[in-house]
Length: 225
Image (cartoon, rainbow, N blue to C red):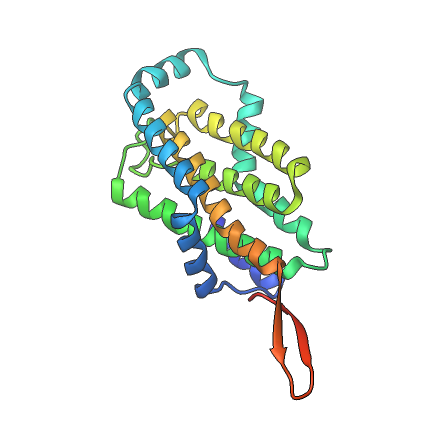
C-alpha cells in the first residue's frame, strides 16, 4: 500500500523513480558513517530486546502500553505521514528535488523492509502472518521524520520523530510487532533517510569549475546531478 501511494504521487507530480539515484542512495546508506552507526545500534538494540520480547509483549497485552486513541494515531501516521510530507512539497520551487529524494528513499526502504520480512519470516505476536521483522510502519514513519528533518530542519523533524515513536509504540500495543521489530525498523528508516539525504544535499550544493577559454578564464557554476 505504501509503495502504491508513492507511485501514485510520483505520477501526479510528474516525478519518476531513478535507478541510479536509488543505487547511489543505497551506497551512501552503506558507506555513510552516521548510517552505519545507526544500523549497528539498531542491530545491537534489537538483539538485546529480542531476549525480552515475549515477556514484554505479554505484559503489554495485559496492562497496555499507550492509550487506544494514541495507538490509532500512530497507526494512521505510519502510512499517512508520508502523504503529508509529499503534500508539503507541492508549492515549493525546488519540489522536484524533494520529490525525487522522498520517492527514491521510500522505494529503497520499502524494498529493504519487505525483503527482510520475507527472508526472515518471523511470526507476528498475534500469529496473523510471518512478516513481523522489521516493522514496516515504524521504518516508514522514521524515514518520513528523517526526510522532514533533512529538508525542513528541527521545526518539522522533531514533531515527526515524536509521531514516529508513537507509531512504533502503537505496533507493539496492537500486538502486531515485538519490541525488537520496532527498534530495528526505526534504525532502518533513519539510516536510509540519512543515506539518501546525502544525495539530496549534494544536489543542492553548487560546484564551481574553472574552464580555460581562448582568451580568458570562464568560471561556470554547475549544479551537481
